[in-house]
Structures are given as C-alpha cells and as structure tokens.
Image (cartoon, rainbow, N blue to C red):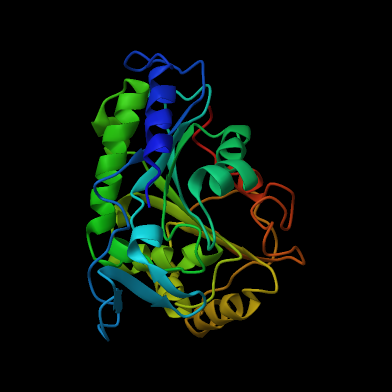
Length: 310
C-alpha cells in the first residue's frame, strides 16, 4: 500500500530544492519518490502466458496473487504502490549529452530502503561521473515476487518513460522533450530480470536503448535476452552473476554461441556498441549490487560508458 506520508514528505523535500533554469548545471543533487499513473502496479490483467488472471485469489473483498516463491500476496499490501524514484545527481547538465539509467529492483525491496539506501544505486550513478539521471519504479513491494505487472503489456513501458520525462523536467527545469529523446541504460538486479525481459521482448524504446546491465539477474527468460542481443548488435550487454543465476547466464551464452556470437568473460574496458560480457563472481546474491566482481559494480560499469561525461 502506498505510504501517503512518505509521498507527501518526498514532494516537500523536492520543493525545498530550487529547480535549475533551462539548460543549467545542477549544483545540488535532487532525489524524490512520487506516484506515477503509468506504474507497474496495480495490475488487473492476465498472466503473460494467458493461463489465468494475475489476481487469482479473493477473500473478504480483497484480491490477491499466488506467487511461486512467496505464497499469497494481497493487492492492497503488495501490488498497489505506484511510487517511482527520480534522482538527479549533483552536477548533472541537461544541456550536455546525457543518459537515463533505469533500475529494476529485485525481490523483497522498497525504493528508499533498498534502492537508495542498501544498494546505493543513486550514489553509484553519481560516483560514476556519468551525466545521467536515475529512474526506478516500485514493483511488488517488499515481496518475494518478480512480476512485471503492467510492464508485461507491449507499449506500457514507453508510457512510463514519457511520464518519467515529465517528472524529470519538473525537477530540473529542462524541457520534457530533452528527456524523451535521451538514450537509456537498463539495469536489472535479481528479480528485476522479469520486467527487463519483457521490456526488451516488447521492443519498447528499443531505438533509445544503449545497452543492458544485469546484476545476478537471469533466473528465466534466457531466450528473450539472447534474442535481444542477437538483434541489437549496436547495443551492449553485460551480465555479472554469482552462483544464483549462473545457470541462466550459461544458457544465454549457449544460445548466442549457436548463432555464432562470441561473448567475453573479462570486464569490459569500455561499454560500447556490440560489447557482450558475462562476468562470473563468488559474491553473495543479497549484496551483489554493491559487491560483485568489483565493489560498487554499477559505478564501475557506468564509468566505462564514454561520451556522456558530467
């Protein structure tokens, strides 16, 4: 359920920051969590395979979903939070070449506690030196569930990104069209693999997608990831993984090899068009976003994306 007090507090916090004038470099970081109309949840549609409704349980007027890992979760508690994190690092300049980093969190997560706090996603993007902003939607709230919700629907993610452009414009004082045309790097951790796979498979914003970074995040849909790589050779794909998702990553590599596509096992010196790398690590799954093949792997990888200096 959406915490209205948290939403109000976030809006007030944003109001405390003066917006930059059009084209001006930001001298203070801005971070807020706001409700979106085009959010992953609530979702009242069918499962992506069409086998039945997503909300398959009713009791005392409540609707619920049976998660393979978590059991029954109720819509009002788990699938009703429309929150999205919008963050603009200090020094971001909308007048220069810039990138939108879209982050899909894993299971058992909330935006403030995990994406901002525990996983330090915003801090890692800022430390990378990339002229970038961060957008992160809330999926199933604090639950063992990887469902993509509305992001299963073709075209829906494009609407989400259009709304994100409007929100970022309000935060920065830049025009929404600036963010609507901005290239995107899609990052998914753990259970974020499911919405990431469907965004790629649906082809939403495919013309803007510079590349994909997966952090211990291939637990299914290996064929979708492999197919996307095969047909988007001008984009990069980097998947760092531990024991948890080793099998899924191996499956992608096998599918690529069958198409004659080679992948590296070494950390890339540059994130550039056509780069494909699978990076094995012994790091624990729960702390993978901050400790993988290197400490702060997201910062390390984004720091190798050239052409967008802050």
